[in-house]
Length: 303
Image 1 (cartoon, one colour):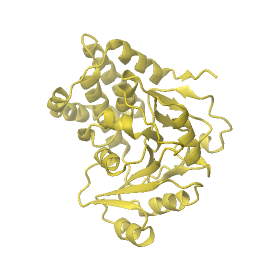
Image 2 (cartoon, rainbow, N blue to C red):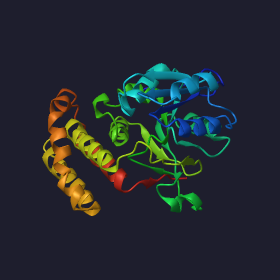
Image 3 (tube, rainbow, N blue to C red):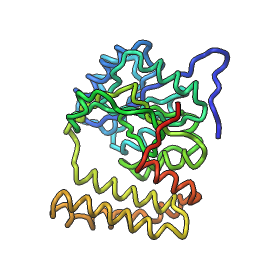
Image 4 (cartoon, rainbow, N blue to C red):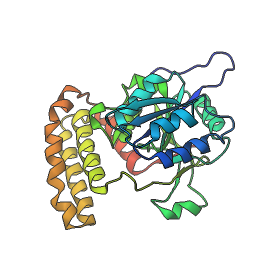
């Protein structure tokens, strides 16, 4: 496990990483909000992933300081985030969506302090005030700091050295479930994933470009792929069946139409089974079980 040690008193550097697809107006709002941060991030990297609107020309003309990567064909948010990690040389990557941004003006400085004070910290996630869950918009408290087993790329800071050490995200996931899979590998390698309630993210959670059924299918497929790659024998079959049944239960809760479409992602998972075999690196059951417990029951961090 490699740990960043800045030279002398130099603070850890921080880059903001955003991937976007045809959501120009949301991206503009986020970039304008990032201008309000004091101090600002050291770098902002944006991947325009197969955008057919005016995103690329707008960023080039109005935000020349942004490090822009443009894909003519969409390759997915996960390969895009891997590309941004290779593009930057900053110590910390603040992962955002094009419709999410930090609320506190001193957010960047606070994030730096957390990573400097905790050399084994790989992931720092934050509560989100989001339109997806309106009750969070006025929520007074998000609880205590705690160790977690998952996070969201719409609002999390990641130590780049840990990201590279773990090999980044699986490109073939395309979109969804890369975060729990990465947290699992980090925790198994001795890194920490924490939730920090003192810093918050505003996530507008736009409906543009979102398809709930498609997202569910990708999430469920990638969750099963993660099991096939990471779960050790002899526990793998039981864990895989549990994941399939749990996802079917969620689909049933959304209606018969959702449940009837579950075989769509089963077939997609089987088509990618060979990739899971090629990339299989099982984790000791003790570590895998610890991660599962953290996902279900995050642990408060002792004072």
